[in-house]
Image (cartoon, rainbow, N blue to C red; front, side):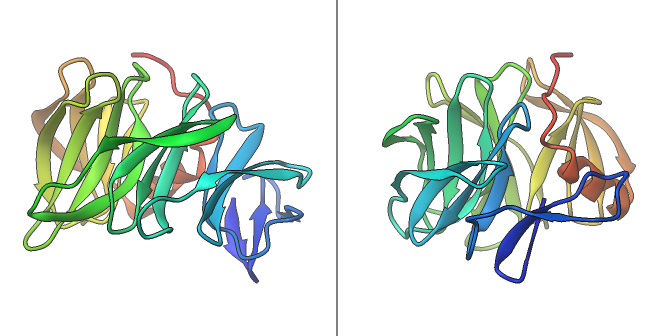
Length: 209
């Protein structure tokens, strides 16, 4: 899925042709549902969910700045989204009031590109620092606890089913233990093309290790 000409488009990786998603004019920060059957996006200070045929519904007004830095849609029907210059929120796919999961601390601006770990409870996200490197944070949706597992000159992070956190600085691939929310000591480089391939296959469900 990608944005071009103010619309969202979908292209299956083996195919050359792309298909426009109707009703997605001016859509921003798109994301897949956990099963790849639907998608979400932000538009005009609201968060939307849509079918691939183009029918869509507004879930809520986006809090604070009204703009998002990415979102992830879990198998439990909850969407976790990061607000530009704001906090991390979650909302049901059926709508309602967004609930605050975490606020940036006083040394941070906001969160970027949240992703779910295999347990479905914990979110991994990049906390954008006001000064210096950004922190990779693991945050519990249940008790709102937070653990920082590393700091990088990066703008996004994603969890790979291989058991790695991928951060787009040089690009680095960091081994990670989801159960302990800890980064392992080994470190190996990953190519930029592999990183974006992982991003492009987020539509498929993650499996527990």
